Amino acid sequence: MNSPLTNPLFEKYFEKVYGGRWNLIKESLTRHEKQVLRLNRFVSAEEKDLQKCEFLDNCFWKPVGYSLQKSGEGLYDFYVMDPASVVVALALEPKSSDDVLDMCAAPGGKTLILAEQMSVGAEEVLGTLVSNEMSESRRDRLMRVLHEYIPKDQRMFISVKGLDGNQYGLRNPETYDRILADVPCSGERHLLENSKEFALWSEKRTKNLAVRQYSLLSSAWLALKPGGRIVYSTCSISPEENDAVVAKLIKKRDPIILRPDWLTQIDFLEQTSHGYQILPDRSGFGPMYFSVIEKSI
Image: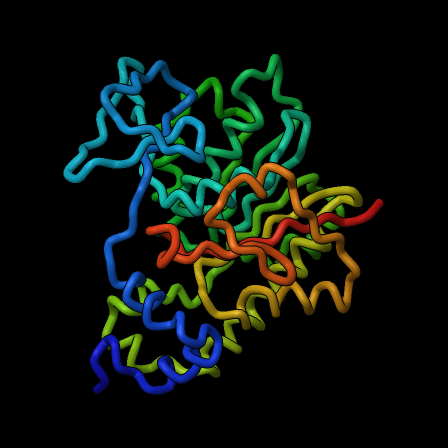
């Protein structure tokens, strides 16, 4: 069996994709990624003596050995996240009047951000947030997160569901104003930590995942209202699962690819043909790919 870092098929594939940069990316994937403590805006939390994250509001770099604590309301002060995941959730930009779907929501950090965007500072939430997770065990974790971070009277607009994401396009056509499709992917960072899974990696694996990912993205497209927005994302570094999936949607559905101005201010974002990539050799966290997609009216 190959060691976790010497699968020849894996090496050949990503050397072809990234060229001379591949060794730096691979090495960075095996290092512990930087994480942030994201301030829970649903409670009166103290920032304490923490180093602010320079490119994300309400985020602080997580010190080594930091332990989460509950506030006076019995809810946690901070949520630990990869900064790249925070950027992805923020890119959806839902309003308080929107009907929003988080299609593959567990463990729940992105749902928390969407809930904050919709409700914190709003006089009234007129929209809805569906937080969907097909896996029962992951859905249980998602529900714990919602209960541990959001007061009961402030989460009434949120519902948790357990459907296969592919069903939304058929069951709920043109229903949602905003959809976050953070889809299952190869997750090469985690793959490198699992010698058995790593030894089984092949290019066919990433191509098969891309088929599933396009199916989920197509479902999101069908479930999206005209004028609505999808953020499609993965934590993969494979172009088959990233730009190639969006390219297929472009060929078949003619979406609009958005380039929000505020994203240009984040210097570690690398622009791709149809989206953005965050790679750990330059940022210290991630990887993450995302594309901001709009359906024309």
